[in-house]
Structures are given as structure tokens and as C-alpha cells.
Image (cartoon, rainbow, N blue to C red; front, top):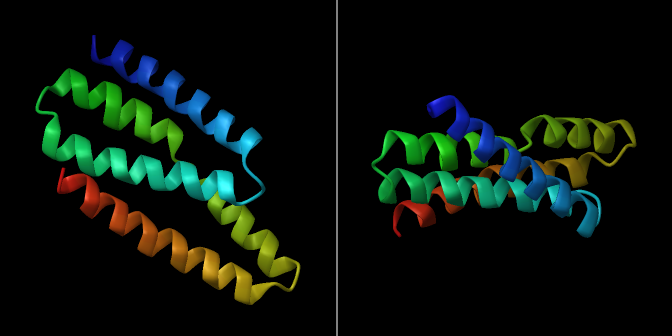
Length: 108
């Protein structure tokens, strides 16, 4: 049953990431998906106590919604294009924003 929960959550999270990447400008879709995933992870840690619920929402949903590999690719592209300052700002905004979203989620 856990495998099905992770698969369903993964489908929903992946669909959410696809939606954000198509609706928001470059970089904003990735950043928004990662921030929402961090918020979900923080909230599920404090709100969900069912292993099946955690598998569905945290492991499947937030895992598929977050896209840290795309973040790294985008950072590399910015640096390669000579936009190192923009890459630094994007990195700091992602790390600080992600940590903040986890804390906010934990406080729910």
C-alpha cells in the first residue's frame, strides 16, 4: 500500500511541478515548486502521523514536486552565461527560502 501511496503522491507532485514550470517564467517555476515542497515537508512533519499519509504527501508529493536537480542545472547555466551574481542570489534565495518554508510548515 505504501508503494501505491508514493506513486500517487509522485504523480500529483510531478503534475504540480509541470504546471508551475509551464505557467511561470524561467527560474520562478523551479523556485516556487521547491518552496511549496519545503512548506509541505514541514507541515507534514507536524500534522501527519500516519505512515501512509507521509508516504503519499511527503515522500511522493513533495519529493516529486521539488526539483533540486533543475535548480543545479539552472545555477550552472547562469554561471556559464557569466551571470554569477544572479546565480548567487538564486542559490541564497533557494536555501534561505526553503529553510524558512520548512520552519513555517512546522509551525502549522
